[in-house]
Image (cartoon, rainbow, N blue to C red; front, side, top):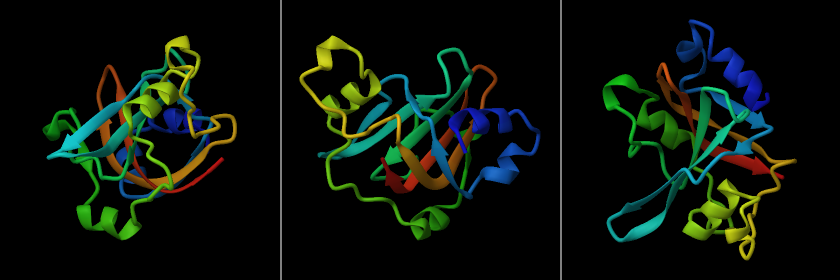
Length: 155
């Protein structure tokens, strides 16, 4: 399904029950910013890249590479999380490149920004398809976010 279709689905009252902990495949991801680069101890390489279906939509998708979304800045009381064992069983995708360096996150988040033209985004957003497990849902009133742990990727 496209990210825009998932955004439309999120307006239905049973969205959390229907999608939390389920595997989905998404296309037509539009980068809309850097997302989050997290550090756990001295390790980097954990990030949540942020996508939206369009520039005005209240809906957003955070794709968590190399981790599950336990470190989000979202209010823990207001976010629904899939059980950790289901996330672990899904198998977190290991990519053959570092998608979480600040340079890659910035150039992928802002592909048309001339400040980052020296870097290359490893994703072709026109063809990118990401499969994964819906690990968290934040049904906020100003922004509705789905958090995805990728289990497959193609472009």
